[in-house]
Length: 128
Image 1: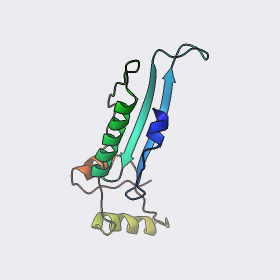
Image 2: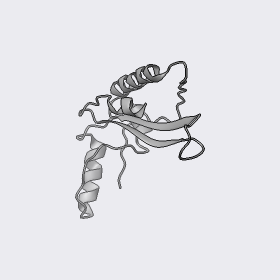
Image 3: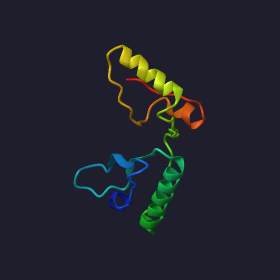
Image 4: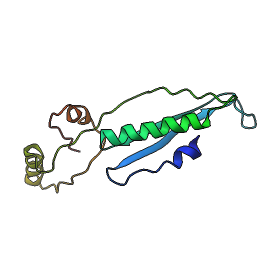
């Protein structure tokens, strides 16, 4: 399954990632596991691209399932994506405040608590 997931092409723009963060299963090192679990983290700067990635993952799930292998998918978390233009007045004000403190602002897209309000159309940003 992991090998097939790694073969899924990811766009460079918008930034999109697929990460198998945890893998577990089995009862000893030399025993074929009766059950195995992987936790997959999917992210994208744009919701439609993330939805397409989820679809490709689900196609991969169907690809590995057969008579002796059953795959169960369970969503364990969701962080919606959003966007604020770099020329938005909130971004410009935050930059000005940092500059007045002698800190050079660096604009970057990342996963923060600002995701939820941004996904609902509210301007938000995270300083750190």
